[in-house]
Image 1 (cartoon, helix red, strand yellow):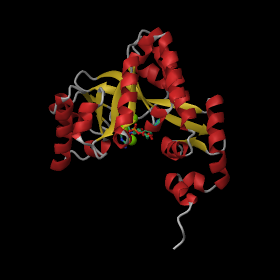
Image 2 (cartoon, helix red, strand yellow):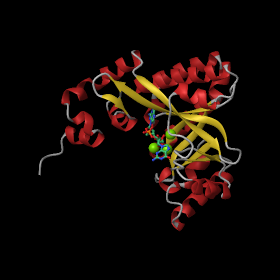
Image 3 (cartoon, protein in one colour):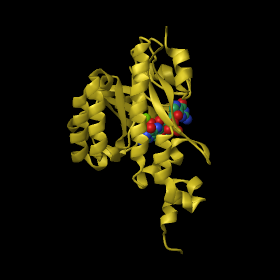
Image 4 (cartoon, protein in one colour):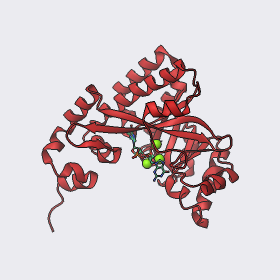
Length: 275
Ligand code: C2E
Ligand code: MG
Ligand code: MG
Ligand code: MG
């Protein structure tokens, strides 16, 4: 059997880029250029209060309009960006543009929250941290409109370290959500040690609630959130039935294809900003 090579990891991360070894070497410079040339785009997926049927906010999901490879979804470049350390170009761009989206909403009189996804490894990026601090110092109310989503597994891997950083972000006014909650190897004790605001129930459980065991997991997460005084939001709602089940369990917020796929900022504003 052949020895495991670097390329095996690359294949694992991205079929796409493994076809082209040169791309691996240039991924950092490509991402840097993508940031400078605005090749990224944030699509917005509405977050809905399923009791009042009101859109209360949105999650920003990044896309890359790559000059040669075309339209790339995050699974095709985020893992590689993380492994090469060039994820910061994505994160910096996302923060800048998230702030602009919120400023634009405010100018139009809309008070909504915007969730952005941040790789946990970025939490150790002090430079980024300072820049964010600087940006929100100019207008501290911006931070209160932004929720930072971090996946559970990444938090648990380095809990002592993450604890401090999450507390710093919260002190700046950001809200913190644990993304994909339930699929990591969570221990209850970390919830009491971390300062977080929101649990996002992973889609994997939400779309299997017809099974008693998955329903039990969803019910437990909602109960957990309540006991820890956290908000809860369900991801990946695709049917009315799922929405009904969730509201019967007192989960009032959800996002998913039932309401909308991720759409462009312009489309989102046209559809959901009441003038
Ligand atoms: P996530 O944060 O858990 O985002 C939810 C994913 O589920 C999104 O995929 C979204 O399009 C998809 N989704 C939403 N509703 C439904 C539904 O009803 N059914 C199904 N089947 N899927 C649904 P997307 O946009 O491809 O993003 C994938 C992941 O990439 C995200 O998972 C997040 O972890 C990561 N990501 C996205 N944007 C960024 C970013 O700006 N920075 C970083 N570091 N990661 C990002
Ligand atoms: Mg997310
Ligand atoms: Mg998620
Ligand atoms: Mg995910």
